[in-house]
Length: 102
Image (cartoon, rainbow, N blue to C red; front, side, top):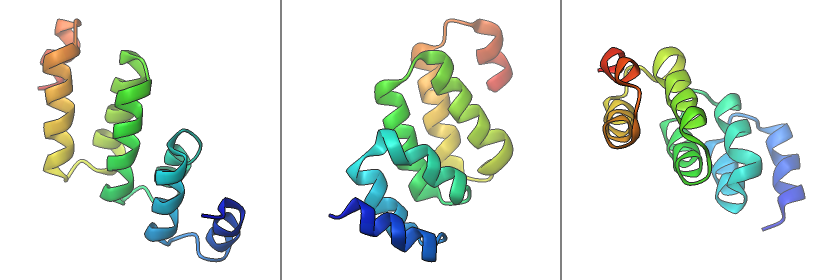
């Protein structure tokens, strides 16, 4: 895939989920946050962003990412809440935060 050509295509068509998805799959560290910022209602792009964040970030950054998604963008998507709460139940050491999230 030619990343430069895809970047140019996104400039012409910034609301194309398939274009953003191809970039995110190629290089999630560079494009996943940009993609969800450009298309905040795309559950598919958020899914790839969560996977990247869960693999490579600290607990605090993970909680911030899910917090942003649940409180501002995707609060109506049950799958987001399931993934977030599963993560909290397995990893959260802050009982107050866990209680407030539930």
